Amino acid sequence: MSTFQAPKGTYDLTPPDSAKFLAVREAIAAPLRDSGYGYIETPGFEDVELFARGVGESTDIVTKEMYTLTTKGGSQLALRPEGTASVLRAALEANLHKAGNLPVKLWYSGSYYRYERPQKGRYRHFSQVGAEAIGTEDPVLDAELIILADQAYRSLGLRRFRILLNSLGDKECRPVYREALQTFLRDLDLDEETRRRIEINPLRVLDDKRADVQKQLTDAPKLRDYLCDACKAYHEEVRALLTAAGVVFEDDEKLVRGLDYYTRTTFEFVHDGLGSQSAVGGGGRYDGLSEMIGGPALPSVGWALGVDRTVLALEAEGVELDLPVTTSVYAVPLGDEARRVLFGVVTELRRAGIAADFAFGGRGLKGAMKSANRSGARYTLVAGERDLAEGVVQLKDMESGEQGPVPLADVAAELTKRLG
Image 1 (cartoon, rainbow, N blue to C red):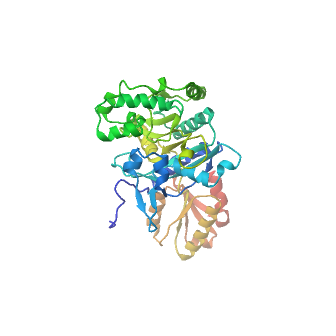
Image 2: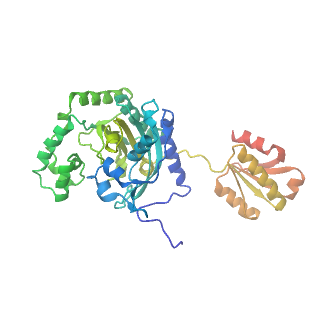
Image 3: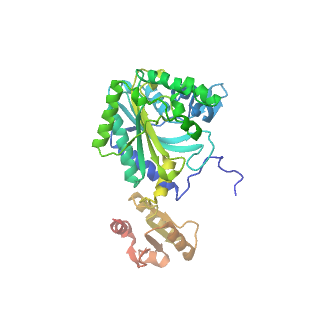
């Protein structure tokens, strides 16, 4: 046992389970790559102010959950708690919005960090795949991103997830609703911290998960009753586009999400098999975020899907992923000359695109064959001095048990044919 262990609330990805995470990341990214989204990667830490301005100073993420540090030069940095603010910062810094082709469509994959009470499905270090479409206000774009996420989940075999949909209005109609909500909330029996939130961002109170708070919110004013005509029309168009695409969703008038930057369309993907941590992903439109962090007006929309929670959702549904084999051919040499020759064969197979491994360490035949079985290889190559003298290797089918000689010069061609 090592002296050190992974920090509390984090996890290591190790084989064979790590293959599931890779497959989930690839499945989420695949429809994005096919839809014009280019890959972007940002640093694991940013200026604290980027998240304070963008995510919101009243949010739990900023007030309680960010990992912050002071550099030797005195700068205040934070490990990134989410991806959108970082991606938008990078796009602005690189002037991607000035290239003349809006929206700027980007996807990303990485680790994020929040100081939370660890539990199943909620970690202090977690992995997400996200997508952002920057610089265009268009309900078709909102619908596109929701459809692509739905497509990704279905390609993995998930079926028991639900899509929750809402509109948060815009700078024209939300202030009127905000005032009405504040008036209602001030009369409730709430703790001091929640009362402070009423004055900073009252919509966040609607997202409070405590039962005693939710009970008092039954008669809270509904945002839908305050939407301006433009926001109503925008939201109805998103709904109509999703319906036409065959994507099933549920209207959820209390859906707020935990970040301050959302406007108009907001959505969440939930899975009822995960208990309290049911959200597997979510996102929405954030038309004012660019201006919040010092950029020009760039209406945008995006989402992030949790890789670890998606894996948990797959397990809850009993979905077994069709994972690629890690080893198709395993080489077992008997003797020093066979080691040199078979290692050359393995190298040739790998260059031909065949997953091949080797019995390292000079083990005997019995031990090496046990390793071949554990590797999951379909075929095993065995060669000793007599085989080499005859210019052949023994090729064994690990499923049928059949074994026979194959000329050394023909090994790669024979295995390519057999493996299809």
